[in-house]
Image 1 (spheres, rainbow, N blue to C red):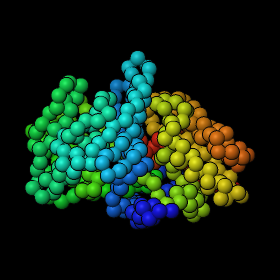
Image 2: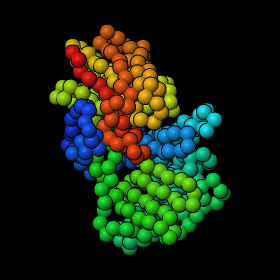
Image 3: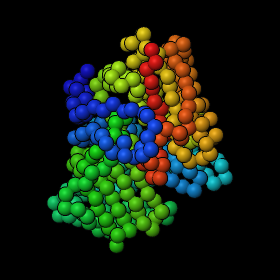
Length: 351
């Protein structure tokens, strides 16, 4: 393992064990524990999952950093956006952002449906210069795309609180509290929560009034040293591990390619512990009917089992799959972030 790999592992300061027992107030249980993370490294493999709600239902977009060098950062974007007619629009795009723009640009161009490179802009967060302005002067000027209309909107962005505020998000499958700068602009119609880290000031959440656009980051993952060992420790100590890095197409049991990393980690756990067997549990939010969610969760759990057996040569006799729909929530279903936390796969050590 390289020095950079050891550094990434050191970023995670503590570990938690997640118990999946039903409770009357899952949000209260969620608030009882937190993991401290000092920063989110801008590195190959950094994955940012955002949740969006529209009239056809929640959907998630995945932004994955595929290359980082001294000149630029490449980011792959994918999403399945539900349409009112019941269909799904499949989106895939690659953006390349210049290092110089990550330092100095004042255009945050969140849109991934256009040019591969948009000079003078950032893509998954603001620039270091924008964050420095908010930190030191309490305000900055920011430009963003004008929604579905051509051109950009420009205006002042003012810091709200004098100190950083907490922002809860899943980081590497653990509930984590990050430090964020909260800012508003354009007569209060813009609102941002920006990661308080000059090296990687991610846009964690924002609303752009007048454009109809809102973004909420619900999960972040980045490579750590020996990830299979982390899953194994959680299973050994608590008997259960929550896994958020398995992704499916919208309303489907089809596994997205971004799931391969975690599937390989699970296979590594079983290879390292030949006496273990695992139950794979699928869980959903409460959007849709009870029978629909129960069937979807069972099909998704079965898809994970099938992938482990067929693609990673895990003995299927060591695996069983079941789904529980929305019956075992970990968080509230009243918010985008809460519903995203309820959509998950859990592993249970049964042998």
